Length: 396
Image (cartoon, rainbow, N blue to C red; front, side):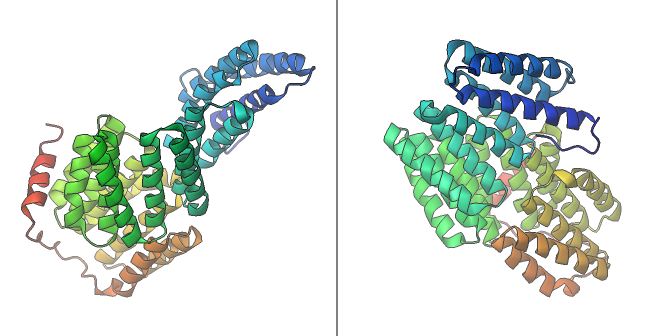
């Protein structure tokens, strides 16, 4: 599951452990007469190997839990007992942005469970597969799994999962650059969530709307949506993700002070790896906005430390904002090279909205005024000023 630079490294051993555990789980689908002996032999070998993995690693805890759950499923001849541990492991890998590995685990769950999977688990697996594909910018696969999850949810009478499916399909439209249809669908979903009193559904939709509106050049309209999502979420991971989006949007309207408050709070709280990566990139962008060379380099180095684990959309954004920063400091040749790299990453990943944005910025790159003080924030609406004031109180 985890890449490694050398066969003896910790990551390599965890990867070997993950491979052995998933092959053990694969045996649960085998109903042949020799199945019992094969399973017991493989279980003993896998248990020994996992026992030698680093005890303080979250990855190890998931692998050990999977070995135990596999033994329970074998003993009771009920493959459904392995599914919670598989889903938890996939969630851990997704949070670490090990998305291909997460898909491998989810594919194992689908293959092993077969027609014995409960409807709720089948829906959950498809939604997670859709989300992983979307984060990998594989929008056709993402849309297919969201659609399958929606059909299963309707058949099972699960309106909340059906709503998440509709949200996901709107997100794939946004990823492809179809902002008008994405906004339309999200507003339709928001009306349904409000009518149903679905608090989390409303939060997810407000956050999605904020992202789409910002991509369409309307960050001032987006900011109240993101703040409303922050208020509606009841878990820290989701609230931190909303703050990361909010920091980006506040900087887009010129409020660097409020943006840095939100983004520093994201870094302080932690949260998912992608939220922290986005916050680090935006803090680097804030520093170049202020024409703060030392701050820019400090945050750039923090971003570089995360670079290997960045998915294509975040990696393209990193290069884009490094390029903007270099231009702000008068290093136009370096800036153009960085924007060319960002454009190539976005084109290879099918990030159409990103491609349009990079091309637009590249066309006016040399109009950027180096070494001048950042412009004063433009006058804001009452709603944006209220959000800025609330953000300033965070962490106090």
